[in-house]
Image 1: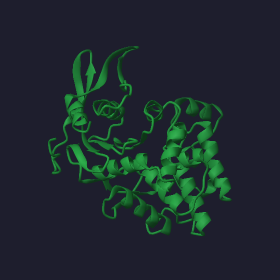
Image 2: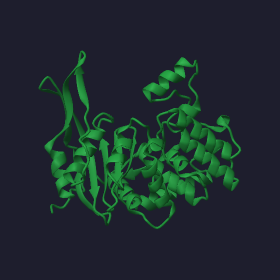
Image 3: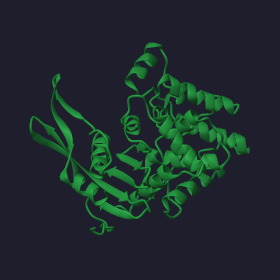
Image 4: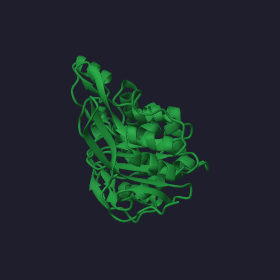
Length: 327
């Protein structure tokens, strides 16, 4: 097997956007794939530089909250690690988490928003409702953070402060699962701290989560995502579909082109699209999984012209080569 390049390099073109037979645009990405022992076996671009995993951190943060003593039924645990679509059951679930801690929507400090799911958003607006924090995709995580603080007697008004005891413990959970040093901290789009990690570390963490079977907090989060993938994303999202296609898989997407996957056998992969685009993520990830010998459907992303499909986003040969290295 070729030793993976661990040094900095320009990320390769991993996806092409075609229109009427013409390659119109391309996407580059950094990629890391680890084996069942957490060792890097295939990489593109820079697998070791620190990135901001954005919402790919959420399952790790949910593990940290369970380790602080938080107790939630499995569907609400999936919601605690979700970037949810704002469907009615998501919004109701956030309210359930808050109510269980003796709190209400006024405690949420994430920004107001409307549901991201098109049908849910249309119904929300048709009802004359307005942007609310409870509809924002990160509200499940925020509700769980508040519930953890209420349980432990920690201040709820300052729960987003990076120096808050909750955030210190969540930082530790990210570091422990990625095996990266204590991570740098930035501010995520929802206002919560986001902890940096390397792509290699992120892939390692998801492999560990997906293969856990000891009844720990790690196992519980993985099982919740697998049993209730629509709670961890949405009924029409590519993440939910991938969970349904591949038994034992554990996955989470994040903003700015991030995506991480763990397999039951302990292998993990992580992707960071260089330009931050979301559209090539499922195409790249599903193509990598297929090349790794995992049975899943190709992810389709059509390019339209008028009312017809006139092109597609397709993975390049680089993706297949990376996947074969890790098969």
